[in-house]
Image 1 (tube, helix red, strand yellow):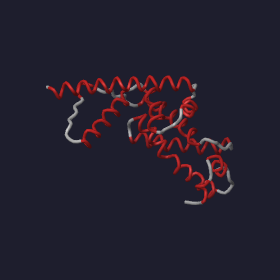
Image 2 (cartoon, one colour):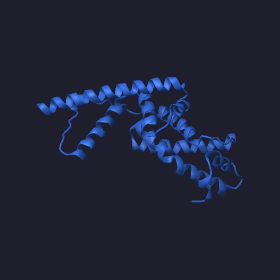
Image 3 (spheres, one colour):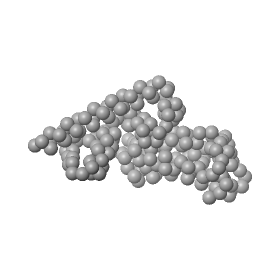
Image 4 (cartoon, helix red, strand yellow):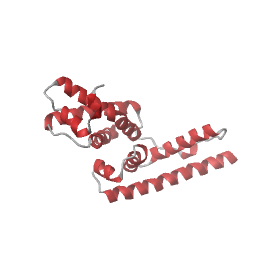
Length: 192
């Protein structure tokens, strides 16, 4: 890449304001390389659709680039800013998507070997996560999959830190109840 990798977010963002188009491009490439996987993961978990997640990822970076060029104001926390854009894009695209619900009666789990069990447990957890209301799912994705702090999540979602903490606690409780329900159904099916 280039020497820009060693710069922090604020410095890289300032380089995007350069008169030199090559410097702007290199700075943008560093930002993309730094944050594309995080933004994509968030979009994929939020939307549950790979193509939509890719579209939102691209739209997020386009909006970010346009914002920097118009406002001419470097951003210190680029990751949080990008996730805020991605979140809004995901929310705006959501009504056009069909929301699928998990039917607990059709979930079957077999236990053969340890690796299969781990794969199935992960699948159960992801299904349970997908069945949560979007506002709770979003917070768990930010906290557990992307490792953001409560303060960072509060900034991204425009909520108070206390509210984020309460909602994440509720989300974990709801997730636990769903997983227990799935496991109960599975246990009954295995015994039959």
